[in-house]
Length: 415
Image (tube, rainbow, N blue to C red):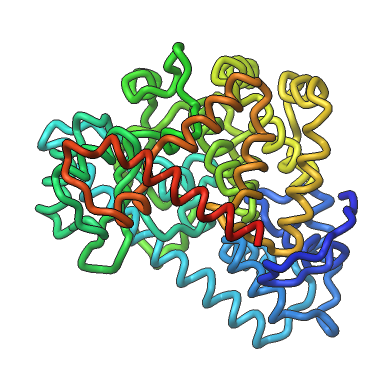
């Protein structure tokens, strides 16, 4: 693994040295560590190791369960109290993952009874398909992709199961949000924000919706496969009956994971690990992935994602992916910036000018950059709707509210 010059950041969460803790975290973030990663884990000298820093970083990056499993199995020496902590982290994640898997099954059965199409992705389905084990990936909610026309029915089906929207909306605001937004969170009896209904993969203003419509729900549904969601790799004391569920095709899943990671500027290692593990799927067609990314105008997003998987997690890239990376001279620069952010545990204000500038730089086509900026300016968000209450016939004026709030924010930045 190479080393990068890490710049100081006002958004430090867990300061990490790239030469020690973060390198170990990267080595521990593989479901099937290669010989080099195994050697790195086995060579750990635990006497002077800062375990508190490491465990905090593993939790922040979403790889605590994966790291725990790899350290328990492959580290040559572990302090007894650290081994107990790692055992607890892993067992706790197993129980949580199995609960979510059972809840997903309950929701999908209800949707099927009401003839509502839904594709679960990320969460338990990703853990099973990419990692081969529900216990190896942490998640805190269930993501369900649906057709916009099925939102009302899905919302009612969730209500039958005890779920209610996390933020109540009037019918008029809900109609507006179905046009300009992409998801609604739902609280359940077991906690808040446990389910997300998504009728689009990204907010409208990200401008990833070409004429080819590769990511329309109907197209994703047509290409979808099936997965037996079970617990083949979990310990015997945790039982779970496998259930057959729809899932995104390997190509669609990889592109979705890249888009999701890019939306968050790859600020958590788990999102890179998801991409690295997805590259191992036997049915993945890399050439088709690159072809679809090019049609969608997200080749650079794909390439930065794959560069990070290769350089941080030692993922083997297919030739089609390597050629795409080599064809864009900005990929390596952007990848190094992202790697530096990951190593220092940096976060972003996702409504800042800096963030929007970074997202713009990730689009390789000028027309997509311009469309993104245009929609960013003109597409009202929930913050704009909450700032000013307007009757439905005046909803077009939310664009003016949007402009005013953006100008106010820019003025605050300049001062």
